[in-house]
Image (cartoon, rainbow, N blue to C red; front, side, top):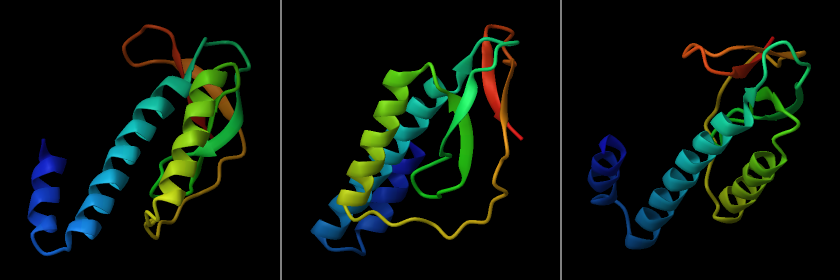
Amino acid sequence: MRIGVALLVACTALSATACKKKSQCGMLEEQYAKALSSALACTPGKDQCTVQVDSSLGCRCSVFANAANAEHLARLKALRSEFDAAGCTEDQCRCMMPKSGSCEPSPSGEGGVCQSK
């Protein structure tokens, strides 16, 4: 809900086209975050976190994801293409590029999540 309120406030100062673009970019970023969460799912103890993907659409920092999660990885790629095609802009961000990933137990205790190192 907070994003919607922020967009409403920001959109009052923008043209309708710019506002629609900002809203579309925000929705794509939310969808990317959800797909990334699924792409990071893994089984602790297995060497699954081997493919690098962007950590978000707004910043091209990399994280390692589970290569076996092909459907979610394809979704990430499609969302990146939509984001770029829509003319969405990226933030200036600084990040350390990870060298590897490993599957660690998730905080909930169910399954695991890829951690980049």
